[in-house]
Image (cartoon, rainbow, N blue to C red; front, side, top):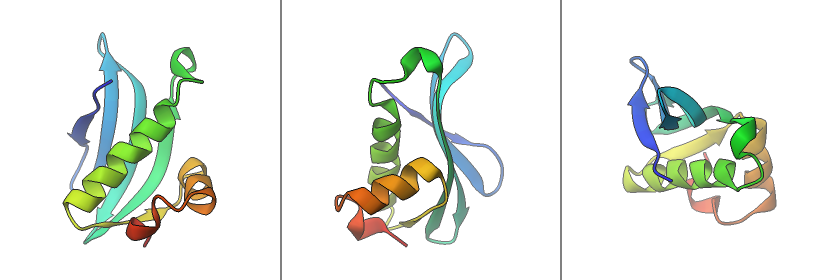
Length: 93
């Protein structure tokens, strides 16, 4: 599954999975300098249970690493992932 980077306004960005013009999965953040404030993760009910939210988080984490950014977790899914896994320790704000 490929996620497209979307610039929504001056500071808001997302990685999205879109099919037939409908966004079925996304992770949204506000870019504040070198900090990605991840505010929301969404996966359509038709895709739930397939690990899509983790794939979205991993794509955002890779993007953060590629650009030397840190991630501040606000979204409950990302907060929990940060608390339960050490794989994101290098990018935690």
